[in-house]
Image: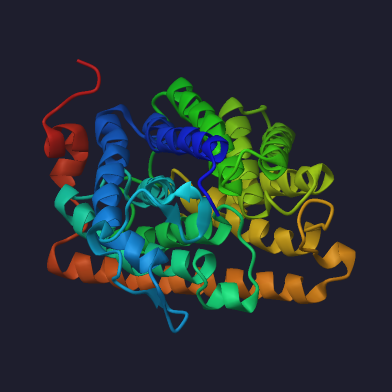
Length: 402
């Protein structure tokens, strides 16, 4: 298939939009932590982007999208982008291969940035770098291959349009595993640790919402009707999630503005695997359920005393899990060639449940083992004194507010 200039232009723009999501994650998380660690929190997102970018071009792309080895992993034929020129991409022949590499790279980067939720305000920088590189190589890359590059989940028939399993289930349940290993912040549960800058968090959420159009509509890999459909259902789900989380918080007291934007993100997460397979009504239900489900997951996390306080697990993990399953319910032949439970295809529904469950177990177990390994050899968290002073000063020698 010859390279198409219109499709290329759209995916170039989408790549830039998805890149903006990584600092968006940084601002969102940065607003949620205390002011003595905001530089550290935003810095972790930029660090995630730099680490994932280099890992991807040297190793990650080949492991993810190299020639299939038994459905498990890609070969090293693209090591350091060996042999990749300006010709067509094997999995997207309408695009230059280098552009496909870049588009997939920004997905890997934002996924790693989401994972930083688990280590907020207490991680050693050097330990995070080692864990990040191990996690991207041993968790993200295999999942990307399994789902998007002809691996065994794809062979089983699993659908994931833009990353419900690869991005959101992986980062959310991995964050849960790391939070269990690294432990609570000093004083967590004994006194209130309120977000220091809610407007900053809302700005970050706005950047995420914007970038998500490139994330989902860009995954059509062309300037076409499917991209338009993905954009509309993405916005519909986000809006529904924002309103149901707002209403849920209102029923318990005050309508939370921060909750509203968190619900928008929940809706965006949930529609991600389904964006190329469902219509507007399906997206409305997916987003509405996600807003309530992720809010209830947050309350459950708080009730259990788990310090994963930027809520990657509650929003990305649980939202991604619901979205993956919902794809098997609401997929319709009116949008794509696939059908779900509502059109009588029980098999697709069962496959989605299986693929989501496998992704949850793999991400959690492998990440828990990696976190334990790094903690044993290097120590994941800073000292109590360093945590008391704040990571901005103790790790970076900088202050957010002079």
